[in-house]
Length: 301
Image (cartoon, rainbow, N blue to C red; front, side, top):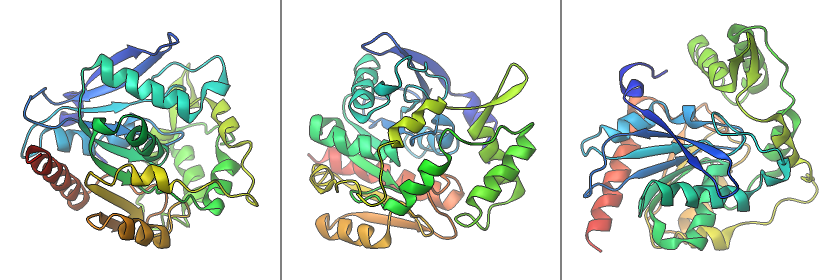
């Protein structure tokens, strides 16, 4: 797991949303006019910590650049909303636009992890000129009902571990089928991203009331497909990172995405499910190269 130097170079800032709620943003790298910035959007219950290895690699890559990662409201170090009905895609999309405006980020490459990828597709519809390239991290226009049912079974319902080691055991029991090759160190790091110390006890790094976002989901009535939203990204380069064991994004959907977007690239991460870890030299190198390619394509426009 990534730790130390590059992470220490990051700085934490807060942006006030339109309703006054404070949103946490982790910023890496210098502002360089000629370098496309990168915006990282985490998944439903995830935080900026998912990008702890990738963001510094992109910020200090062959071309240094500005990288930001945003904690959605109710996650990480962003304020929790007193009204959990606001944990919805429309409000969260508004929050992303507010952050982009406040931090003066024009066009950027977006790395959307799971729900963050849905927000990226929605942004492509609402503000197409904001996106110069997109990395869809184990998400696509069709979300498999089986995976959503699994998410619904544990979001907001995780047992409270006494310590991070016990948290690692809980996560291993829940997710070992999708992640059979993770090391003890990786499970422990996952626990440290899932819980935080709060007055001596471990608490989830997200508002447990996020479970309400899945309350209406019925496995017999799958979510409508988002092909129109995916097609809104047709003019920009796309990279899909797909966990071979994912129960949210199927190989068939990845193939259908590639048919609709002939230049689309994809990386399949063996022995990992939803969402694959954004770490390891090879994966970091491939994502960095993709961002540089987006920049090259952008400069020719």
